[in-house]
Image 1 (cartoon, rainbow, N blue to C red):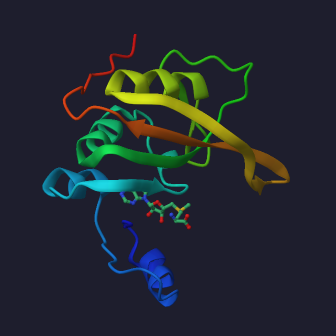
Image 2: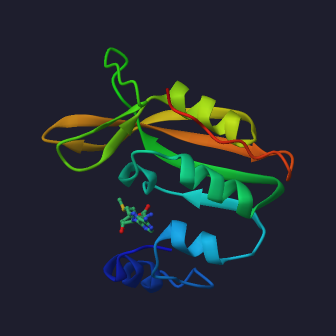
Amino acid sequence: MDLSSKMLEQANNRNCYDKIICQDIIEYLGDDDTSYDLILAADMLTYFGGLNDVFLKFHQRLAVGGLMVFSIETMPENVMASAGFILSPNGRYKHQGEHIVEMLKSTGFDRPELIHPFVLRYEYGEPVDAVMVVAKKIESGKVGQWNAK
Ligand SMILES: C[S@@+](CC[C@H](N)C(=O)[O-])C[C@H]1O[C@@H](n2cnc3c(N)ncnc32)[C@H](O)[C@@H]1O
């Protein structure tokens, strides 16, 4: 799934997807009633500042025991942001890993983990740091609302 038809054209050329959908992820998951075992968002959530709606939608659509896996750009440790994220000049967001973990826990995910810190790409010769996040849905009834202070 992607908002960009050009990106989907490239995906289609790989001949490995059963279904390709051009839509906003939040909109799509709001209308959809499929229960997924895995939701993978590769280099997509960097376009979101607040992630509460995304996490709630992912949680609603996952089957109990289902996994949510995504990559996120991370902020330098010496930068503080009360919202838990900052907007970069390139229009992408960088997030505080620990803030993400707390949000996921309060949304009803079990032991979210930040794994595999890696360099996503280089911009103007500088590394863009990122991390993979894995979280498991444990109970279908337990959906919390994250309130940023
Ligand atoms: C850096 S690309 C990564 C594309 C692909 N997932 C990959 O790993 O190669 C980020 C993609 O996220 C898509 N995107 C951003 N916001 C989105 C949203 N709300 N719903 C669906 N796709 C979105 C953009 O259109 C863009 O193609």
